[in-house]
Amino acid sequence: MTSIKVIDGGVTAPLGFTAWGLRAGIKPGKTNRDMAMLRTEQKAETAGVFTKNLVKAAPVKWDKSIVAAGGRVGAVVVNTGFANACTGEQGDKDARTTAALAASFLGLEAEEVLVASTGVIGGRLPMDKIEAGVRALAPELKAGPEAAALAAEAIMTTDTRKKQYALEFELGGKVCRMGGMCKGSGMIHPNLGTMLCFITTDAAVPKAVLQELLAEVADDTFNMISVDGDTSTNDSVLVLANGMAGNGPLSASDKETLRAALYEMLKFLSMRIAEDGEGATKLFEVTVNGAATRDAARTLAKSVVTSSLTKAAIYGRDANWGRILCAMGYSGVNFDPDAVDIVFESANGRLTIVENGVAADYSEETAKEILSADKVTALIDVHDGEFSATAWGCDLTHEYVSINADYRS
Image 1: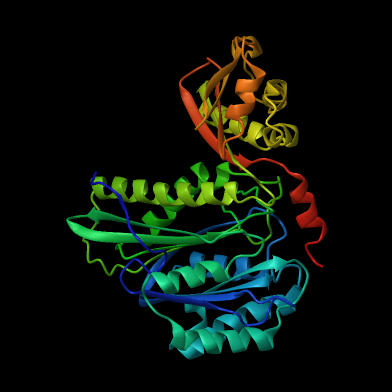
Image 2: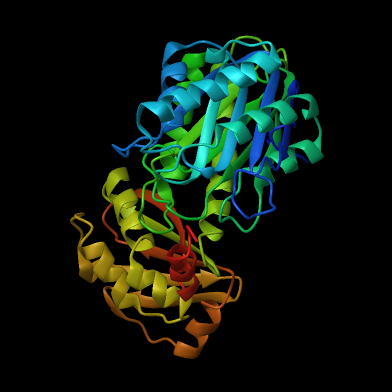
């Protein structure tokens, strides 16, 4: 497997991709950008994973049908402000109309355009502003870091910072690139996808392989984060591979390199979402080792990272390890509580707080110092097997309540 190198840029880092972001006026009373477009010069193979919430937004239904049909895609249009969820038949029509509008300006068919929306559930898209936004975006599409950054900014809602990443690697001796952007800060508790994420690559990848790798990697990254336990109606992760790097058929080694690059990309973006959770002051990482099965490790890690009491303790810099054991105990996984070890770790140090299921001899002041860092890790060993898993979340703060109490006002 060749090395994977971090490079500048986001979704426009791969060959043939252009993007832009601007304000279309969709968000009432606000001045920030609220609409983005992504274009590929050569139509791309596409893979996607989507929310498992029974209540699915119109864009999710539109994109799922396109991904399932297997056709190549030429563009993606994203709006913030309104989720176009729970909007009935009219919402479905609005999603299709958005795709058709973009297609008319870009020389594509409607079925070659993916759409994504995020924001308040239940409100119809302001189609006059959507049309004006599409019309303004199409001639502005550009390659380069600025365009990628503007697009990443334009898909934000309650996010406090844009989230993007770019990588370079080789497949079959050809240099390939992968770029990504995502948004997510609240209503984060995914099941096959999280909020909105768009990945581009100039690698040539068969659709079946692309879908297989995305589903597998998303399960170990986006499906292992949680901010508040709410799975969105709009969760979507989309990957576009346009093949412009010119690599040949994938060898077994190439496939492993591609998997590693995709994992690096999705893990990075997952952690950026978790640390930017609404009102959060720190990233909370939980690694479970020594589990009897992979599923047991995953379930235990997610149970701890989603525990409201544990998250509140992390915010308060309180080494209340009883909350961690409690969350493990109601996870449904069978383990021996008397065999559990727990360690807190951060840039400020490392401290064992539980040995063999009981409190270790540790300093509360030292624990508080370790829990004061921007990233805090709980390392848990259940001594029951050889499987491990990591989940990511954030602390639970007063600000989270304030943001969500005032979300529509």
